[in-house]
Length: 275
Image (cartoon, rainbow, N blue to C red):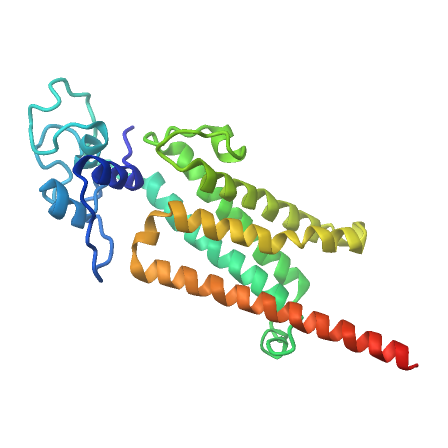
């Protein structure tokens, strides 16, 4: 099975062609599912964005770009493997979609935890909030994060193994930036720890539970860096803008929550001293 990687294709495009794609306000679309966006096929490669195999040599256009052969020359390469050129890179699309879904549920999880303690937001979320619901949303976020990582095991172009998706900094391949990848893996384990300990809250000390849940902002920062640096869909202006805006909004809510917490502690101390 040969599955193309958009990230690697873009990297090769910039390295070999020394050109930068101009997407403007257009959405990033791969109409023929060959691993190259329509814009890349038009602006750089001169291939047909409506055909998965422009030169009809049995190799998808994206595969030829990654392998360094010409997607316009039927004689390049000379010896061709037998491929199913209509094969859809499903693992790549599942990985991208699950990453976005996982981020949304992580955002909701952290937002609920902050909002229920924020005087400005508590009235909004209180009617729907419960600790069990909070834990459930966190578990859903972990599930989609697991789908996100696991899907890339089936992407032959990446060549990931279990250690690559479970152990930070294990993967050093040039096809993916190792540091942002490691941040994503660490964020996953943090999410896992916080979710499991939430379900075990009644069986552990409240102090330990609180300490572990201070990992929340760190995990979120790791996810933001991971997604923004190596996320293919961050090339889409609308997605990247929404991603960054929602991240800054959550950071602002977190800072406001810290301010309210400090104010409450000061008031409590003043009250105790006045008695």
